[in-house]
Length: 261
Ligand SMILES: C[S@@+](CC[C@H](N)C(=O)[O-])C[C@H]1O[C@@H](n2cnc3c(N)ncnc32)[C@H](O)[C@@H]1O
Image 1 (tube, rainbow, N blue to C red):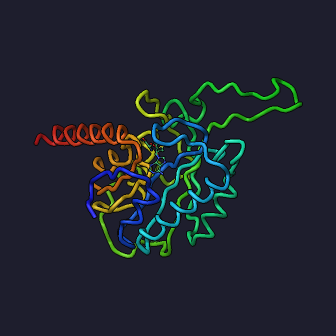
Image 2 (image 1 turned 90 degrees about the horizontal axis):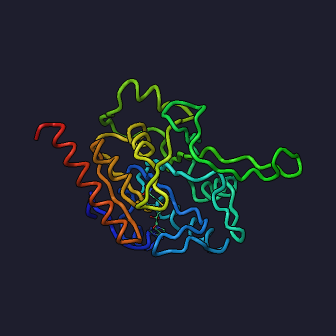
Image 3 (image 1 turned 60 degrees about the vertical axis):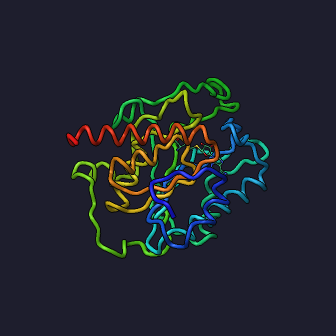
């Protein structure tokens, strides 16, 4: 198993090549099955296909996680909205539990324009439903979930070095996180580095191995380099992998420049 690399392929197949219990933490945001064009997939599965796909990658991640492994799973308010495959978070959580995971925390990520400011929401979604009428008004989703899961042991089995600052610990030890969403013209649906950064700082030790089976533009790997963790990424679209490698190299150069190397 090669650490600090991104493997090109379908993660449900690629993870099968990884040994059991080799990963300390999974951090990922899967395709939401909402019809985004990711180049190599149409993101538009039927309900049965999406359920089977979700079960498959969750079960494989479970196998490769260590006994005390954790999984930070970022999903939208509605997990999949394609009409034929509508899947809500209750169904997702039931699926998660049926595989064997336990739910450690549910963190609400509020997409605020300014970090820490709960009043300034990102986005200009104007899908109001019925405007100023009780006929059929719709709440706009201002948040996403981060479900934090345990494999078995709730506590880490070994001692290690945590790298978060006191202020980070205070900020991250909350079930509500406020920071802006990422806007990118290069990838269809990236999350901001802040998201994997927080998960990694809070839930892993220095040197731990982090897997992102849907690594896209490499955001989780950037957070790993920044925090001194090892990463394994999987991505189906080779153009995204090229983008990820460039970001990782830039992050390493910035770190070296910062240390005066
Ligand atoms: C929501 S995006 C993740 C974006 C990533 N967090 C980032 O910041 O760039 C989902 C990614 O999964 C990839 N993908 C979709 N199906 C896949 C599969 N079966 N195996 C591996 N990657 C897949 C898509 O190409 C897309 O880049």
